Image 1 (cartoon, rainbow, N blue to C red):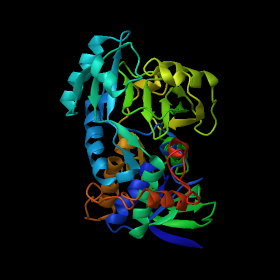
Image 2 (image 1 turned 135 degrees about the vertical axis):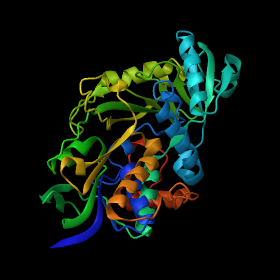
Image 3 (image 1 turned 90 degrees about the horizontal axis):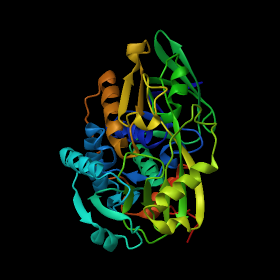
Length: 410
């Protein structure tokens, strides 16, 4: 026996949950499915940076503009899903001052608010910063707690009629006459769906989902490690002001600081090495900015896999691959009712979802417009409620497990 649904969204990370919310708010019948709980892929295994856009401003102006736009929107709608810490790009004695100036100019071009601080001002903000700091660019970076963000999106989707299956992996797709006719689910759902349209939002696994419909989506996944240490004295996000490299960011949580990250090709997003050298590299490099983390207790480590889309760059350096997003209308590939959304950053999940929902609504003849930039997320002002959503959708990831409280906690 099969069940009808208008849109099946495969992948319950931030983008997939965002697509489900967007479509549900437009009155579309949606089913959202994931395996092993919502946010169990890249979203819940990130370093949780709320990008200002400054990190990639000099190499990707459009991406930087997208980030600062979404940064401002999330600060309006996401409440306790984020933490507005601000950020610094630190120029150390060993760093190229010309790169600092290039980034500063690029931020201005992208519309990112900046302020240049001398070493004395930096030390006033971060007393434990290295003595090698020469100056910094202050930017509106922040922190995302992805478990809360994903769960809040799913909760709002469900409140507007969506069906959410957090532990129901897609096992197969059946094609007929150039369309996906049926989608087979395992896990707690164990059912067959007859969707009018399918959205592949499976992140690093998008190629695997696409292959079920005899489609090819060329991925170039890259793993990266995050190291969370016991450190409660950091205010702003710290970024090394140099070309993106291993161990160049420190993200403050409440009682911990997350050090990241590496970038190593990992063709299989389920099976990859967790190398000790990556952990030590992050500690050593981040300690160049904040020496105290070298001696701080390591509370936990985790790896995430970036969903990089690179049809022409499979052998490229993963750090050189664009962090922009792409949505693929597979009608162009012979499957008329399927689309893939891939790439991007956690910060731009809502924009990615809106672009995908626009495409799907055009296909379905739905004229409603996106409301997600104005509608505040449910529970945004109630951290306890957000954490109950996380529990409801089996959505706890390692990124924010030091912050998100279990419902059984006092």
